Length: 304
Image (cartoon, rainbow, N blue to C red):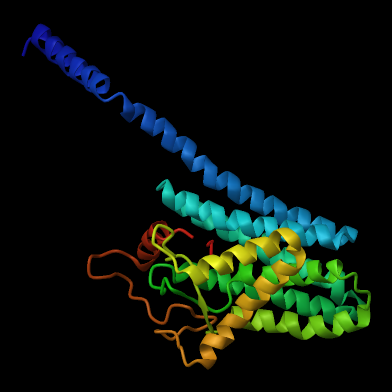
């Protein structure tokens, strides 16, 4: 083949590529847009992580109400980043892992530090042990959730979600500040069993409702609309008390479902979340790759 014919063929191929881009100008724009959209959920996760860090700083400084508000802000960010990632189809394994690390700080360390500095500090080493147990259980809960993302029931959580436990502690601190209570001994007496109970519920098999499958485009009953309107009015009128009531109701919903006789469909262990794993499945894929695929398909941290 001569040089001229080869050169002409390369020029025709180059022209076809250029003309194809000209016929589909949105392809290049879409690629740039998707790179930008990937940044949005990661930025929201970073805001939640920073909220958890600043909550720790506020707890150490004695600003307990600010620490609780920052945990609530991290709770909002945790709900937004997963929804935005799913809506924009920009879920990634990096986003899943980053969200889990953020949750350990925002919903594990930050509420434990708030509980210790606000209520458990008078009992010294015992308060440190109780708050430390909360951190450990929150990390175990997140690890179990990550490895069961692909196989878990989308309508139920196994154990109390970590953001729910953190919201409970933040709601209690906000309600305590709202009513201007001042009884450190009574507060410490109540917070020790409550913190231990929250830690135990996180690693338990108690079923909790999940709102991931909630369809916002379907018609709702009038009673539900009235309840949401009343809740919104209470949130504007007295947000501290409303946060406490809502978080308490959710924490109690798990034992209520269990008392009603509802059980999880599969047995779940605390320290060994996956009962049995084969080295490869029928298609030759490793279990780690299967879990990664499931995590990308159902990116939540979610976030729980």
